[in-house]
Amino acid sequence: MSISMIGLDTAKSVFQVHAVDATGKAVLKRKLQRSELIEFFEKLEVCTVVLEACGAAHHWARTLSTFGHEVKLIAPEAVRPFVKKGKKNDPADAAAICVAASQPDIKFVPVKSPEQQGILALHSVRSLLIKQQTMLVNAVRGLAAEFGLTVARGIENIGELKELIDADKAFPARARQAARELFDQQRTLAESIETFESEIVAHARTNEAARRLATIPGVGPITASLIAATVADFGVFKRARDFAAWLGLVPQQHSTGGKTRLGKITKTGDGEIRRCLVIGAQSMVFRASKWKSATGLWITALLERRPFRLVTVALANKMARIAWAVITHSDVYHAKGRSVTAVEAAM
Image (cartoon, helix red, strand yellow):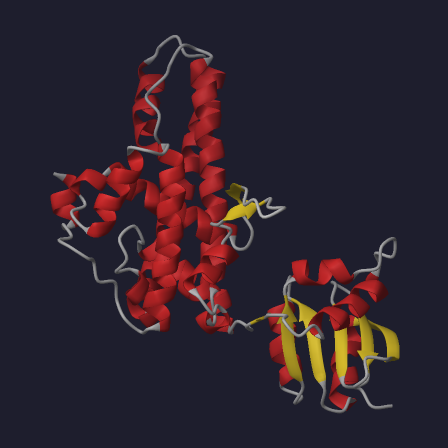
């Protein structure tokens, strides 16, 4: 039995192995328990092992590569078309991984290092805490509104709401107790978020790729750190447009008969990076009239013809392309025309 490639479908406790020879013929189909996986690959002759890039795939890729195997990760959406219709199970998934990995134009996902995953863990937890903070703020706003107390939108006004509740003698004691608990939880979350952001900013200042990315207008330390930690190898994208497409910042196509029809953006790929780029682009569009560069003039002219939201996404697309360029060319962003400082733009 000569094994050329193995498609490995991973799970929490059960792993499905589908092995093929050089001709693509299946030579081994086996289900392994988690405790059996390491021993199986230790004894196996060196071959190519392919996994879907999800869950603990990066951990298993690093582990199995120590046994001499060539481990590759493949995006789940690239495997899905090769799963036989009506046979969605672990053996079918493992077989589909082998078929997908054998395609000549398939692109593999670079394996992340433990350091990269550690930084991404900071980003993931920070995003979760921000969502929880938003939920708490909305809850306390709703509670106060039931008794006629409201303040302007924005988390920076939550302190004012607390003062209103404390000063209102008619506010029920039990409702005051509930609001106080929400305020305490919100304050604790804010402190935790600040701690995580300090760690992320420190990474952005010490990582070379993140420092290059931070020179792009609209890309702050949070976004720069996230991109640097997420994209292990920009070389997998041949062109800047490929990177923007991977982030889902290009329009969907519904073209036929030689007629090109473009729709909304695809929103594929990493949603967190896309969200950060759109937020950064939005801040730049707001002050486009003070951004005295070629891009600033482009934004101003585009705003005269297109809606604000469309312009924001267009700028996010451009920022993604610039990010690809500064990393692949080992350079920093150079504005065409005069670029104002952040202090000047705020005036």
